[in-house]
Image 1 (cartoon, helix red, strand yellow):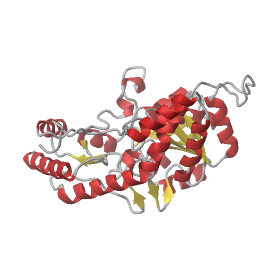
Image 2: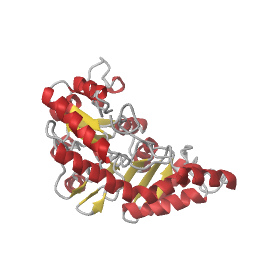
Image 3: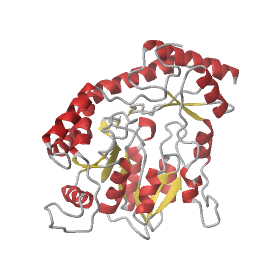
Image 4: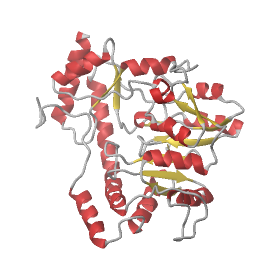
Length: 368
């Protein structure tokens, strides 16, 4: 077994000296909430999303929730979402009182299928929420064309896709709002946090009100808001991570390229034309019993993850009153949920670990 681990873990969050020193510096400053570090983080992150206004919040889920709320999505509205995603995507829709309408995914990218999106539009549809899943950009050119035809808002769930792009345009810079997560396992993190990017200055101001009890000036509350502020400690860590993101992204891509060229016994990830994939996850498809394959890999010292074994429309929180998943017909979603397996791809993988992962995957795949 290469390296110093009994099992190569599926993720290795980075908290290095730079992040620790940044956190200590802020703690010693005494300005720890919604201060200069947050403002600087927002300004610096803007460069990643084509200069859009950026509003930092306390989580990726909060980013989605506030974006929908600021756009006026609420009771009586429908939002088109994929079911093959983390529950936060649909949770945000329910949190503003709207209903998620689940649609199927493209088999290659695992992202929402534009044809399925258009077929789901009704008179009640207010927004589309594509997810740039696993770091692969959704088909935003087609999705934006659909949104324009029907007058719909687009809120991008870019929680897993920092730095990804389509035809040279960064994710988070297509719709009315782009939402990012800084959870520790993401391509960059700030322990916990989120960011909303928007081209609309007035929408950005409303988002700032919503995250801070409805006020910009203390005790001058303008609207009903919440406390979804980001701390300066988190922002300082995020700034350090952001500076390292380009290097980390290139290493992720190099690791993925190596796995592409050496894994032969499982179906490796596809990348659409014009897509710049940042490989939050390196996700293969397993023939046969996926869970058994994961266990055999673990026995060989390779940790894996399954994202997502239960589509959102089948989670208990989204079942109908009779306990059923409702009317959804999502064959590609169901197939992906049975077959996907994510392998380690993070930047700190050694060459020996990469080689070992590929050998182990081929051995398990050939035996399936």
